[in-house]
Amino acid sequence: MSNDNNAPAAAPVSNFIRHIIEADLAAGRHAGVTWGGKPGPAAAHAGAPADPAKIRTRFPPEPNGYLHIGHAKSICLNFGLARDYGGACHLRFDDTNPEKEEQEYVDAIVDAVRWLGFDWGRDEYFASDYFDFMYEAAQSLIRSGHAYVDSQSAEEMRANRGTLTEPGKDSPCRGRSVDENLDLFRRMEAGEFADGAHVLRAKIDMASPNINLRDPALYRIKHATHHRAGDKWNVYPMYTFAHPIEDALERITHSICTLEFEDQRPFYDWLLERLAEDGLLARPLPQQIEFARLNLSYVVLSKRKLIQLVQERHVDGWDDPRLPTLVGARRRGYTPEGFRAFAERIGVSKADSWIDYGVLEECMRDDLNARAERRIAVLDPLKLVIDNYPEGQEEECLAPNHPQQPELGKRAVPFSRELWIEREDFAEIPPKGYFRLFPGNSVRLRYGFVVKCTGCEKDPAGHVTAVHCEYFPDSKSGTPGADAYKVKGNIHWVSAKHAYRAEVRLYDRLFKAPNPGAGGRDYLEDLNPDSKTLITACLEPALKEARPEARFQFERHGYFVADRVDSKTGAPVFNRTVTLKDSWGKVEK
Ligand code: ATP
Ligand code: MG
Image (tube, rainbow, N blue to C red; front, side, top):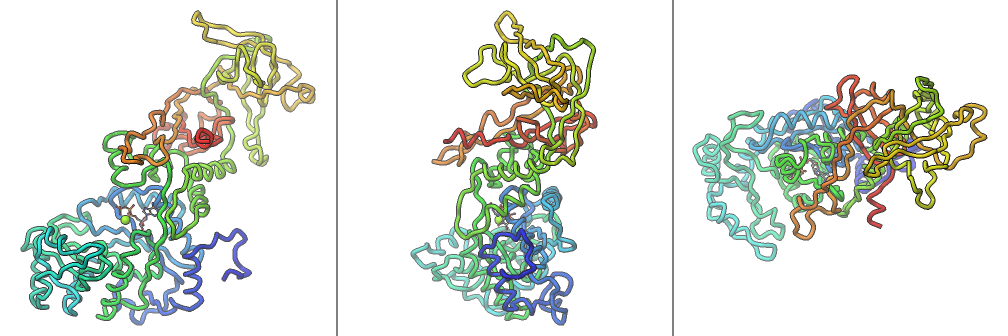
């Protein structure tokens, strides 16, 4: 495959998962996979044609929370592989746990995966739709002597499980007959027993060096209402039992999961083998492949912590632009293209590692730099008065929308006698190497005229309230005389009379420590108190028309997006996505 002449020019970087898939394809390992058009047991696929999708992967979130940046890695990986190898990727809601799952999360997950740019066609599935099959499968395991009902208490079970160095002890219930097990399991399902009274377990080996093979639980009693199945069930399958079955019913070829499931793989294979032997599942069976999850500095990705941040109002909801949720990142102005580039850049490996948050920001900058139009914004306004410019007069200056893309054209920016400039672009007493405005110095007002500073006004406290200057009428950018003026400073400005005053939220990182909570500290102590600053900025008038989610580079400041929630027609508010340069990297060095 690697020397295939038809490979796209910008081929994705190879990795160990791609090697496995390429070897499998070359060996025709999936040639025997049949596809009856929808998930189902062996019978549903028997006699069906060979699967037209060459590989099948899946993204299997549990709908118990919002997706985060870590999930984006898994989404890009699974959908990306399906795309690159002519396969299909399923979106599967792993909703086997009735208590924490909600439709709200299902909807948010659908939106987030679509937003990242992926499409699963008709392949959207719910694990709960397989509950009938799973119940059958459990009974089949009982009949073949591979499962039993255990009536030990949770404490007894834990005590008899053994440790990493000591084998476990057989349960006194392990010898129950098939009939007794079937009877008990059916009565568990019928609702005759309280939660925890019995558990259905696989009968494998209590002395196995792999603790996951010491008769793992398959089904537990739970008198709970499920968000889709309602009150139909009084027993629910364990994740480790359900997940392999879901994969097999959907004819997944490569079941890609994070490293912590590596020790579960023997059980994954054991279970599918038993059910294939019983004739319930079609061969070839899916194979599980583990990769290292994304660990990202300066954020927390644990669902528990994200929920705490939202519930205790450390942030303003799930879509707070500072949260690493995908809804938050979207509001922040991060782009799907940036996420896909990030996934490519960090790659896939078997070894756990930490990625610096700056890498993600750099991917967003690269993408935004290429695509975001430029606009002018004064974030910390100070008045500049051009004393020799006629009062009441105004004219237009032309500013390019993108310096590297002339085809995006230019726009007119109004110019008048009073402008807003950045407070930091004036110094009454200039520090060494300062080329911007100070009395006697000349600078270019970007896309406009050269002006010479004549002085400033101050309030009684000595605070500068306005700067004065004179302009050179023949110095306008783009006119023949302009080049005669040589100045070192080049500052941006917005006409005071025309400025659009708008709320701008200057977001920064949510945590000030690279590894929040490291060393046993409460991770909340590492929250960055300056992660959100609200200002009223003076923006060039064109920004008044910005649509929600329109992204811009505010020259010299960074990338900003019109907030998709709080913007009103003709009155957008802006969020800072990322600064132009990585100030965090500098601080550390
Ligand atoms: P939970 O602890 O509730 O299981 P989870 O983050 O694993 O949380 P899931 O809904 O089970 O949430 O995750 C869906 C998929 O996303 C899984 O296949 C999981 O392996 C993957 N995933 C989750 N976190 C990361 C991460 N940090 N990096 C890469 N993949 C991840
Ligand atoms: Mg999980």
